Each structure stands twice: as C-alpha cells, then as structure tokens.
Image (cartoon, rainbow, N blue to C red; front, side):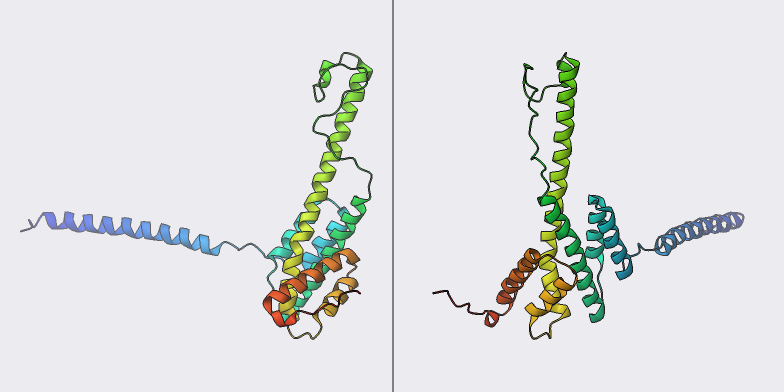
Amino acid sequence: MTHPQSAPRLCQSVLRQSRLLLGAALILFSGTASVFSQPSQKLPDARSIKASIEAAESEQTIEAFEKAATALKSYQPDSLEEKRERLALSAKFMAVLARRIEADSRRPVKKPAANVALPPGVSGVAGMSPESISDPALRNEYEAAIAENRRNAQFWTEFHRRERMLRGMISPFVSDSLVAYRDAEDMEKRLASLLTAEGVPAPTITTVLDRYRSIAARLNPTLKKTVPTEK
C-alpha cells in the first residue's frame, strides 16, 4: 500500500522519466530524419557524360579518361531512346580511346628498364644511387637517364590502362546493343554504322563485331553463319 505522502513524489518521478523518454525519442527521430533528408549523390546524365568525354578528348590525361569511363559505367538509362543515346556516347568514347591508343603505339618510347644502366666509364651496379658517382657530369648524365626511364614507365603504364579501359567497354557495348536494337534485322551492319559514325578506328570495329558474333552465337546457336572456306 502506497503512503499518501509518497504519491506526489511518485507522480513527479514518472513524469520526469516520461520527459526523458520523450526527449530521447525526439533526438533519435531528428537524427533519422537528417539521414533521410540528406541529398543523394547525383547520378550522371547524358549531358554530363558527353562533357566528360569531350574533356578527355581535350585534356588527354589518364584522370580525364577514367572519369569519363566511370560516368559511362554509372549511367543507367530507362527508356529505349536513352539506351540508344548511351550506346552512341559509348561509341564516341571508344573512338577517343582507340585513337589515343593508336597514336601512342606509334610513339618511339622505350620500354622502361628495371635498373638504369650506368654511364660508360662508371664502375658499380646498375640502379645504384646517383650520389655514389663522384664525377658531377657523369652523375648528371645518370640522373637524366633515371628521369627519362621514369617518364617512359609512366607512359607505358598509362598506355596499358587505356588499353584495359577500351577492352573493358567492348562486351558491355555489345550487350547494350542487343537490348537497345533488339528488333534490328542486321545487327552487324547497325553496329558498324554506329561505330563508324562516331569515328571508331577500323581495327576496333572489327574487334567489336567479332565479340558480337561470339555473344550472338551463344545466345542463339541458329545465328551462326557458315563462312565458305577458300579453295
């Protein structure tokens, strides 16, 4: 049995606990609301992707190329018209990539050496520190050779990154084309026309068409065509 004088104290205690619970609930709700109210990261659209491709073509840096590739990969169109627009953008970027790769493949840049050879007349081990060479002229020559080797290594590293970037685009491009142009009667002709219109070099077009034939044959064996053998 509760004593009459303790009743007010009990009511005050219950009221105080209720206020604490209400305050905690409001804090939790406000924190949850702030999470849901945070703006979501804006996904790329066709306009921003086109701008990133143009920036890659203009700047020609590996960072610009990778930014354009990431934007294309993140773009998930809904309508059929948008899917076809994405294909055209992919073809444009493939053209920019392939042309850069072709140009770089013709540049007379040496493959980097694991250890730079010492200048003639210097005794020691290839790759040793330049400070080990006492003659200033020979030391400068060795430092210049090391710097050139470092530039060559960076060139070929970026070259192979662009190659991997281009190879990684081909299968998704073909898969997207099978969705965007699923009713096309002559898919090879349509793909060749699209790639040619965007300026994709002929060797890359051949690679894309070969990949299309391979994928189409697996999807539907009846699509295989018999190529007559030369006599």
